[in-house]
Image (cartoon, rainbow, N blue to C red; front, side, top):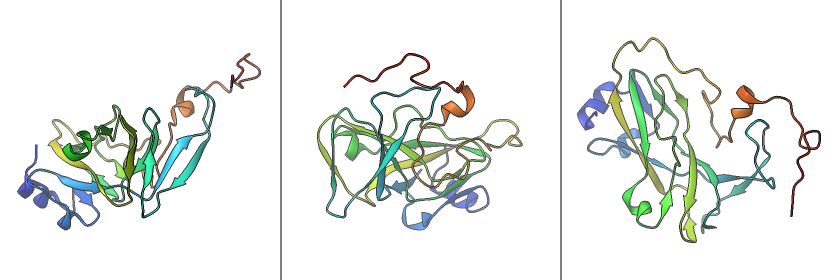
Length: 184
C-alpha cells in the first residue's frame, strides 16, 4: 500500500483526487459526501431491468437516514487511478455509528475516472450532512501490466449511479409480460 510520500509521487500523473493536498493522510486520501442521495423508487428491484430512482437533496442542516434502507451517494471528489488498485474504505467514526458506505464494492479498477458511488446503509437512524468526511481511498500497486484500463459502464460517472447490471444481463422483459405483480 502506498504511504503519503508514495501518493505524492504518483500525483497527478497516476493518481488524481480533487483537492488532495488538504485531504491526504499517512496512507490514504480522505473523500467527502456529496449533497444528494438517490433511493430506488420501486416496490422491488429486478437485476435484468433498470429500476427507477429518485434524488434527495441533503440540506445543510442534515438528512435523517433510515435503518435498513439503501441510499446511493457519491463522493464530492473526482478521482483518476492508473497503475494502482484503489480501495475505498469507510471511516472508523462512521462505522462506530453503524454507518456503512459501501456494501461490497470497495475496490476500484486500474484506469477508473469519476466520482465514487457509495452504497450507504445504517444500523440506526443517523443524520448525514453534505461535505462530511465519508471515506478513505488507499492505493495498492498493480502487479503485472497496467495496459488494460477500465472503460466500463461507470467510467467518468459524476452523479451517484444506480446499478447498470441490466445493460449486460437484461432481456427486455417487462414486469407485466412475465407475470410479476407488485404487492403493496
